[in-house]
Structures are given as C-alpha cells and as structure tokens.
Length: 483
Image (cartoon, rainbow, N blue to C red; front, top):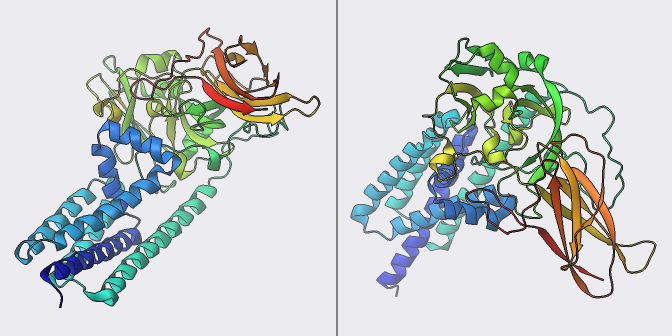
C-alpha cells in the first residue's frame, strides 16, 4: 500500500516532468519567431548575479559559460516546478500562475525578441497550470512528459539553427570586407605548436553577457550617431564600407589570466571613430561616446581621447577579410586596441550617442571601475618540444602582446636564473601580438619555466598574480618542463 509520503514523492517527480515539458513548449514557441525563453531567463541571472558568482562561473566553466548557464536555467526551472508540486493543492495553482506571470515579465527584458519570448512564456504557463492540476503519475506518465519536453527543446534548437543559417546567407551577400591578400608572415612560420599569426574567427574567443547573438538584417540595419551633436547621422553598411580601413590588432578579454587563451590577433576592417566624430561635430558639453548594442548594453569611452587619437578607436565591420560573424558582433562593434574587451566597446551596435559624464555603463553599475582598463603586457607559452639537434635541448615558443605601444622584448627564465632574451618574429603592428621562440639547454629533471613581455613604452609585465576583478589580471605564465 502506498503511503502519503510515497504519493507526495510521486507528485514531485511528476511536477518536475511537467516543468520540463512546459519549458520545452515555451522554448519552441519562442524559437519559431527567433526568441528564446531559456536565454532570456539566463540573461536575467547574469544581469543580477553578484560579481563573485559571475567571476566563479567564468573560472569554472571557461569557454563553456553559455552552455553552463543554459543547463543551469533548465535545471532551475525543473527544480522550481518540482517544489510547486510539493505544495498543497489549494496554493499550487496560484503559485504556478505567479511563476507564469514572472516569466512573462522577464520575457520583456529581451528587446529584440520580446514578442516571441512573451508568447513562449504564455505557452509555458498554460502547460504548467494544466500539468500541475493533475500531475502525471506512474513511470509511463512521467516518462512521457519528460521525453516530450526534451523533444520540444531539441526542436527549438533546430529552429534556432535554421534562423542562424538564414542570417549567415544574408551576411555572405555582403562580400569581402577588406582583403588579407597574401597571408602575412613574421619569419616564424612552421614552428610546431605556435599560435597562428592571425586567429581565425571560429577560434577567436567569445565573451559577452548574451547567451545568443541577436539576428539583424544587414539591409535594414542603420547605425545612428546621435545625442549631443550638431549633425545626427544615420549610416548604412555600404556607407561604412566605403570609409573603412584595415588594421592589425590583438583583442584581449579582461578575464584572460596568465597563459590562457582569451586573446586573439586579427586583421580588422573598420572606420576610425575620429572620422565619424568629425562629421557629427560633438557639442562642447559632450564628454562620453556611448556605444549601445541592440539589447541596450552600453560601454562608453572618453570623447577627448578618441578625437585626439590617444585612444585609436574603430567602428569595426569586418575581420580577416570577411564580415563580422554574429558571435563577434555583426553587423558592427567598437574596438579600441589597447583596452580590454569589456571596456573597448559594444558588439551588435545600433547607435553611438554623445553624452556627458552622467551616463553609467553596464559593468560600472555592476561594480567594475569607471576608469579604462588598459591591457597589461603579457607573454604566453604555446609549446615546448624536445630539441631536434642536441639531446637535452627544449624548443619553447609562444606569443606576446603590449598594445598599443608594441612588444619591445620577451624574456624567459628557468627556475630563479636570470632572465634571457628570446627571438622575436617580425611585428605586424604595435597593436598586434608578436610571436617568439627560443631553445633551452636543460639537464634531466623537472624545471619551472616563466616568460614575460616588455612593452616599447618601457612597461615590464607584472609578475604578481592577481585576479581579473577589479583592475585586470597579472602574473607570469609558468609551466613545468620534464627533461
């Protein structure tokens, strides 16, 4: 005979299955029109989570932070629905209705797809209410609801992929964005294990607070330059292409700790911000250039430094001879070589607004410093290989950067021995990364190897290990070599 406790456990499991089905239906309804209920909830969590939680997530999940967030949202919804199932019947349905209304309210936080996401929230609420009224019981009932929910989520993912393919076709119609021509060389070609001189788009790191890149029609898209200006501008993609130039630069994430891969070098194609500002003519009281994404996310830059060239900023529309990919900010982003990515400008740009110092950015509101965070000189070891000519030698190679001034030298040391210079590849530009290599003669055993970069401005890489928050990471990349 089943006890009340057994029935309650069965009801909780059934409620969890209902939650998965409700989430699946909500996701597929939203995905039919390009939205995502899961991504919207995930963005709310990212926007409201304490900074220590955000930093821990970055460290633990690395490049899989978006997938981890989505899984967390799904598990959270299922757990919350299971908790609803444990409530008495008289309060269960009102509580479910409250959850549905909350989901609908959260959906409006996704400006580019709010209508589709609201529809998804309404559909999910309907399933939630119906399912909790008479929760599925028994193995077949629970399994049926669970498999249905999982199938709907898979169908939603297929719809999202279809939308992505359609946008990719639109982007390809734009054609080339600049041209690499002959592949650039630095004299270190063929060095085994060494990073490419130019990072392909699919290998360039991605870091942002959005779980999915917004889909934007390049033919309808316009960039607005507005606010405290004499002339408001509204520029099409073709107008920007006509004035764009190419430049080589490394982009570095503020979360790139010693030796990590949250950095990439590319040939970018964009319009100098100083040129755009000449056409708009900022008012005397304008002090900030606010870069605003389609979802409202903002990063602002000091106007005087941009106009004077102290900050060499660009409105970027291409990368490595092709249009930006959606993950990297299509149709446009702002990039200032020498600033960490979190401070360099918004992706998925919709407008540039000239404003005064009263404006406050997304990350400043979250507790990061208002002062610009400049990229620290850094050297990374990419590979260590046995020597080919003399037994006991080890070939070591890597990359270093110190934008915008450039890398003057890279030095390496074994244990606590003196620092020794290494061979540098040719420099593409001061803002690019620079490849390096050397050969170490080491006796048998384990050896600690460290590397550091020295900027042309005279700044030597800081060896003190420090976390990214709040002013950027420092420390030497340190490895152990076994001979």
